[in-house]
Length: 224
Ligand SMILES: N[C@@H](CCC(=O)N[C@@H](CS)C(=O)NCC(=O)O)C(=O)O
Image 1 (cartoon, protein in one colour):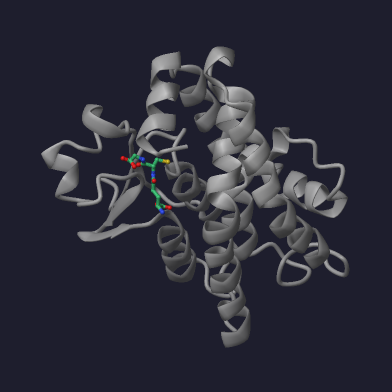
Image 2 (cartoon, rainbow, N blue to C red; image 1 turned 180 degrees about the horizontal axis):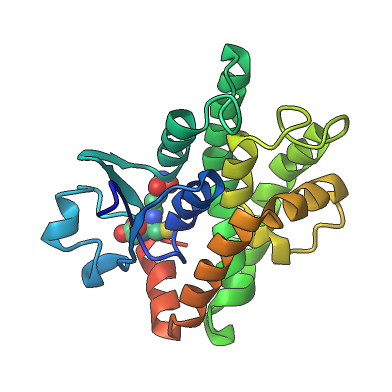
């Protein structure tokens, strides 16, 4: 049996943990549980993550939740000096970009993708869509500028900083990104990596298998 278990259907933020596991080439067991009463709110999962949110991992008995804590932990544990930088300042930059992604763009991109694409047309709210685009415009300009003199966030190499930010905004690949061309090119480069493509395939499959009511539940339960 694999020592690493990843909880959460790939359509959720579990995608981030699946991507890093594939990027490193880890052997893992995927437990594709659903959000809410169908899975994440059941007592069995609440014992793993008392927040009732996805994802979480169990690594040889060690439990961890919060998607980007998971990616940072797995990258540091298995890919120090490659995905996870050895230098303290580079490491701090990985934390900086990861916290930035969660605080500045995670919610806005989610609201955008639900109200632009994923919800049935009758459930979409153009005002929420416009507000989300307004909220992410400034941080997207900051991200675009970060690539003025480098192909990846820390320099010439793809690191967990890129993985985390690209995973958080992955659904923005369907957005009009013409105002931020460097961001668009970088996001394309990140999502074309073989590991990202495999994780995206799982995500697309679980998106496709989610009926409209499941998407409505996502919007309601996450207040998006
Ligand atoms: N900050 C958390 C957010 C986790 C989260 O909200 N996950 C969603 C699925 S993508 C969820 O479980 N929502 C259900 C709920 O909030 O009850 C993380 O990045 O892991």
